Image 1 (tube, rainbow, N blue to C red):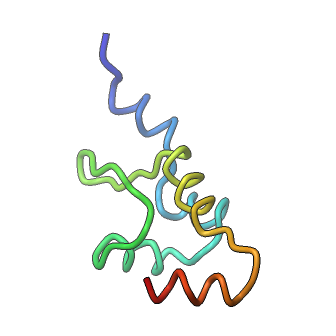
Image 2 (image 1 turned 60 degrees about the vertical axis):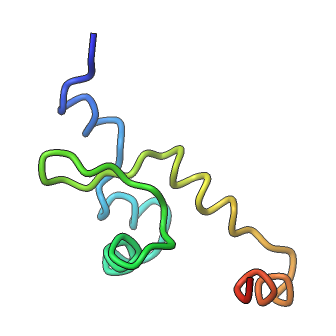
Image 3 (image 1 turned 90 degrees about the horizontal axis):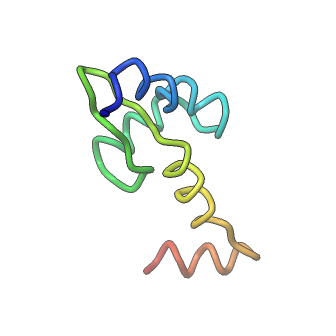
Length: 76
């Protein structure tokens, strides 16, 4: 049996919840959706939702050991 909209909303985060739990401003999440480069999201019935698995994967992929490592990744 499929998930209802309420079940999907309940197990994912909106941009305000994602901002509070993972950091970054609501504005950053909106810009990232518009221009790319942010975490994957779900658009459902006019809502934007972020699965925790996608937020975890997005931020885990940005862990670096040094500022020079971050600079090299940014240039790539």
